[in-house]
Every structure is written in structure tokens, then in C-alpha cells.
Image (cartoon, rainbow over all chains, first blue to last red; front, side):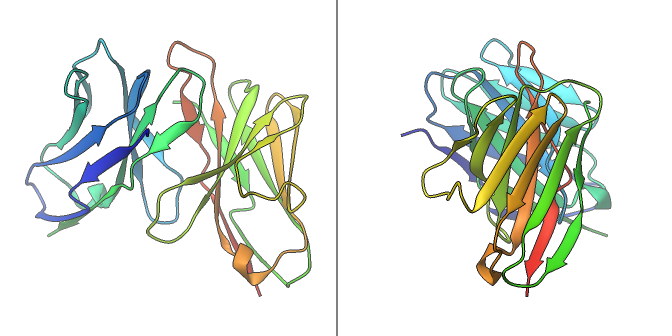
Length: 112
Length: 116
């Protein structure tokens, strides 16, 4: 069964600190993996998207890694800001063009 | 990134009325758009796939006569919630797929529907 699991479910960190969010998937055949940021009451916004041949991709203070062998991905946030408070969703596509498989997200709260 | 808009952003209606939500891809053509529903603190649930010029494909358990989808052009898909009831209250999000090596989906900002 195609599944995407994220951990932790929620996380609270102090402003300026770094954090890493985890994503494990059992989707096959794998096409690509995406990380989205969703603010409360808003639609998801794409942070990174990677295919199996890409090990790491950065977008500003966000860096995603992908290990296609172990089927794991991580999203590292550097020097967190209050505006980073949101839900971070890991999404995997089984085959290009097919429906996306969503993780339940990690809720990040950055406090001052 | 590509821009997808939704209108309205919020709507409150009486039970039994119908509500139309528009999803537009502003800077690219999308032959395929998707409609999702999201409950508080839950993940997005795919409701249907909207294909330009043809009938939408609905996910199991989603009533096609309840949630009417029209994808009349390459930049516009509409979702009409017919005879809305309080249990239809939810956050509805659309996405548009841009043809590329990633076939990336770009999400709209969402529509908050409240049925009284």
C-alpha cells in the first residue's frame, strides 16, 4: 500500500534554531517527492521537488534531502523565523501524472 | 512559481443552496486540475480530477451529483456544491498541473465554505 509517513507530528522550536523534519514513504514506483508549506487557512506552497536521481535540493533556508534506497526524505530548516510556523507536508507521486500521496504533515511552531 | 487563484476565498450559505467555487491558473495552461477537501488539522483529501473538455474523475465515496465539476477551458475549473448541507462545510483547495518533467501541481489559496 502506498503510504507517506511524517515525523514528528508537531514540533516547537525557538526562533533562530534549526530543525529537521522526516518523511518515510512506501510508494512504488516512485516518481518524485515534494515538500510543501501550508499556512493555516491557506493552500500549500511548494518548497522543493525531487526525483530519484536528486539527493538534495535547497530553497533559501529550506534544504530537502532524498535517499531513494531507504525511501526517506528530510526537510532541514535553518535559522528558523516566526513566519516558518506552518504545517509542512511531504507528498509523493507514484508515477508522473498520477494522483499525489500526502503525508499528514508536521506542524511547526516557532516561538520568540 | 506558477500562480493559481480561487474565488471566493470564503463563502457562507444557507443549507439547501448551491455554491460555485472557481479555480484559475493565471500564468499557464492546465489540462488537468484537481479538487481537494481538507478538514481541520487533517491532510488534503483528493475529491476529483478535472480534465479539460471531458468529464471529471471522482474518487471513491465522492458524490458526483453533489459536487459538480466543470473544466471548460485550459485555465478554469469550477466546483459546484449542490444543495449544500452543514456537513459540507470544509476547506476546499484546487490545484493545477503544469506539464513538465515533474508534472508539478500548484495549489490555490483555498476556499472556506460554511453552510448554516
